Length: 584
Image (cartoon, rainbow, N blue to C red; front, side, top):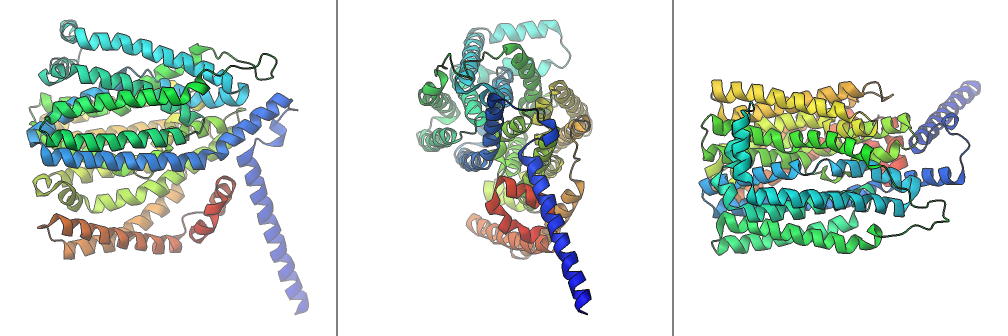
């Protein structure tokens, strides 16, 4: 008996020893390149690797600050939307949705992908060549952005009618919607605030990308929070004074300009820092051509994902004579679904791209693959619960948030939330910056434009032939986005040693669906559509019940594995003691 006990104890000790050795090996892979891949490093190379690891170690705190800011942005924009829908007639809100969508489209057109080039190149230049070299690069990018904006501002103020006529005369297929938008009297009436908004927002966006690339999110958090508070306060005051849509647009333009000035003042010491000539890290002047190449590819990609998908859907609704009220419904469903999709993962905007760029310093495919897989899992963990809850409670959410007048938004919200859920768990938002990092930006462009083509074809069928209105537009948009994500995943298969975590995704989604059933039944039994405060309270109780069921079911199904725990241990050790309960 003693011999058997000794053998069992000895076997258990060997198993534990083997597990810890595997843990240590995984941590080595996460934190640095394998030993046989590392040449004998000079002092400069060692410092570069240390800077890369430093950027990766700052990723969790940068995410938290960016997430706090992103959460406040979505809450404040939602509150502003509530104010607008309560103070403006439905037709006026439709005009606001139309004009701001046009603003957003122009904003993406003039970006030229500089933000994505900043996320990808600034961490690399900073780690390999130092702060002064990074400052030299960002000065060039800011100067080019301002030069482009001066030209665009002149075109907007003086040449829109000429541009519309020129496009009309060229008879470009599918350009009639653009011509109609350029000749829209509401757009031409608000050209001055449009120009100010584009100028201020564009420069501020590039400086935000700089802070994100260096994992310095405190500036973004403070300035951005002040901006959102100002928008809420002055938006409410202007609407109370009866200034209407025009006053709100002027407010957006002026506040964005003030945000730009704040960034420039705060970042002046960094932007104009000089390097020491005798230093190992003297100023390195990064060639701009690779940045322009990546920027143009990112511009074409972001133009589709950030602007054209929504703009084309609205244009299709206009072409097939869908009224302004239904366009307003489309905008509300689109906006709320996107907010639910990004609510807890907004902090990864830019931070994920910078982390992937830092992971790939030294062409380390294994470290990049681990970071890619980890980001997909973390985004699924954070975003999927909220999307599942919104999917099962779409009608109730629309009624509670926008009043009974907007109850028709519920079905539209459910449609778009479903496609956002599929897109999020697929990892689409992580695939795109990963393609940039490995030098395959043209394939990201190809994926987005194929998706856009699907939106146009399906939108024409669903809206024009089947008369499905806003629902058809949202289905077409969702299918196009899903196809884009699948294509990007296909193009990445040869560059990443590790594969998409399908088993984790299926276990986690199954847990969430089971958890949503009790909360949905509770809402069905106790829902009283007469009082909005009661509705909101019922939704709150349903949300707490859903969260409790999630925790219980996840602790039984255990979607995480030991490799996930090891990865979290290397990035944020404090989280491990909370998440071990959900690991197999």
